[in-house]
Image (cartoon, rainbow, N blue to C red; front, side, top):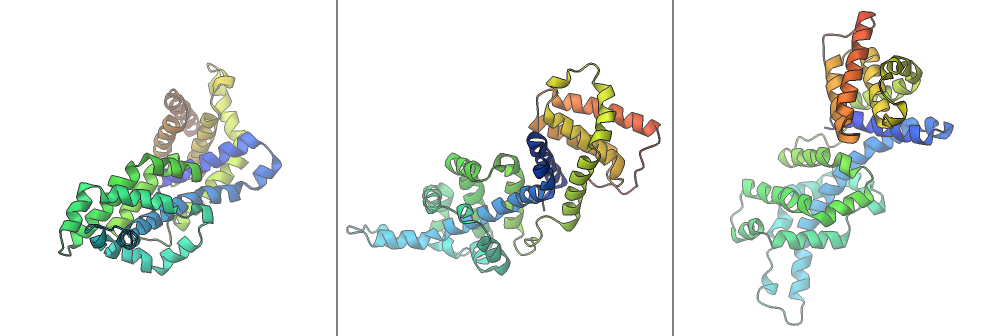
Length: 308
């Protein structure tokens, strides 16, 4: 499942674009933009699983092409196609829910055949694959291991694929770690993985409420922030930092089940990752001071049940 941190990042990205555009049309389409951002994580996830499936399924095509060569060698005539029958691959090929999601991908988000072949050749040249085809006995663990090797040892190590993903998916660099984790979770538990619900209704609601709240309470959040900027040059404060602080303050005030310290820690981490080297320290100090002011004024009302 997509994490709450990933949801926060998607909300932050949406708010950043809205701030940069600063038009009524952009504001009116805020919720749609957020849903598109959230949906891209699922799109990349489906794309990578389908790419993995097509790479494994390329083995019979490779065997036919080599066998049809005019001067086919003995090796060309005996290409091992075992991986095409891999249980994980077969599960993906026969899963109606997965096939429906693949069918819903735009044409430019379907795996490229040249990339499929390039990955397949990298795979077949690797020692783990050679060992896999030398072993003629069916083994459940071995079948899982070769797919893990294909994904983690080959696909996620290939610079051309990484560049291809960045070219076709705007937020790939942001989604990379999350999607890799999701794919590995699926490979580990394909039978029980919640493919139909990659983003839970609860997290979708949280994302929408956080976006709407920040937009509605922006002026009030800025009233709380500005007195704390006396020793800072406003023109040098990164726009992302301002957005992150507004998000944090909104969680303090309007999301009673999220502990304030959890919000601070999450937004410090996001600031370090997506803003300037000094942003983590800056966001930490400001949010901590605003929180103290709000607590002193009796404005913080948190419930016991925390969620991060």
